[in-house]
Length: 275
Image (tube, rainbow, N blue to C red; front, side):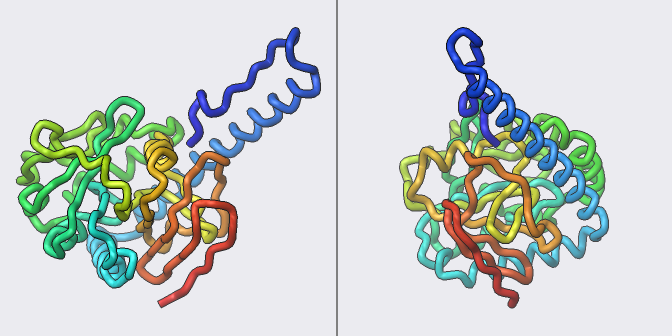
């Protein structure tokens, strides 16, 4: 998502020609249309998730994790920047535990204002109950995502508290997502060659991505350009085309339970291979 600072239009009639002002107005209208389509797709995906049982989503998450672990881009990575999944997302706890068991350095994001930073965690931070999500909260989460997606904000999302899940060194963040405790976890932003696992709501075959509207990964990856990036998604999150803006960052790889997409963070085609 582009921020207001990134889409500034000066429309002072005394300084800018009428033609230029009209172009600016048209561009703003185009952006609003794109963002409306993004909100609509978020609602569609929230409804699609309700068609699957918790067991089915867990099984798909397990398969996706297995497939990520087979990739060379994972095997070659010394550091992995992952994330704690929301209910209904591709679940990441088992993946994070395996990364640590494989001897990789692992960091999770922490939101600080409008930006995001990554802090290192250890195995004790995530070794807890094996259930990927609380079943009752999953239903509530799907309802909230559907109702609040038009706000393009994660401010209303909620996940289980760290103490409820038996975790160490992870605390609820500003948006309710479990994040590393900065007083107990080392900052790892200086690691510029990590494999970044990107969450998302919807994707297309050109690797365009729709997030939750906060723009955190877009801003982070514009500043940290050397990381390799991989998005994990369910098959039902893949569309023929999703709306996107120029400042949206695409992952270099995207993997579902049955497909692999490979591309780059620049205009160009991406292929999908079913396996």
